[in-house]
Image 1 (cartoon, one colour):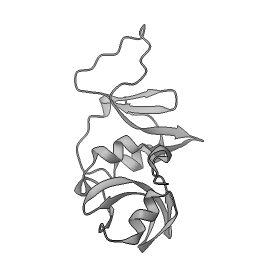
Image 2: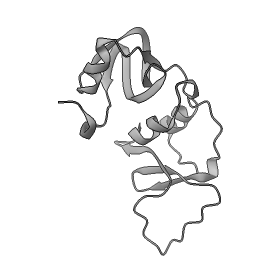
Image 3: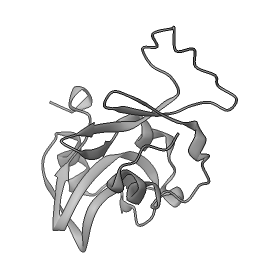
Length: 138
């Protein structure tokens, strides 16, 4: 069932692929998108089920790296797309804050040559890095 979170629903509106609202499952702070025809037994403790959409922290939805890797650039409303030769790509991979060329507010899918890399949270032109810390380049 679709979680009743305002910013989660706003976030879903930016995804350009159809989804079935009955396949969303919330387990504490984590929201998953379950496989079709999935039936969960309440007597069984599940560690992970389906695609991790993200988590709810401090009442706000934060998208997961897994979701970013499962989207294509054209499936997200207004992705930010860099070429591989752009120096901001390496800065992003190192976990640094980067600057965008346009103004935007909210989460954006960051892509390199139309391939998803991860999330940024943009405010104006400043892009806060949301790349998974365990994958960052040292």
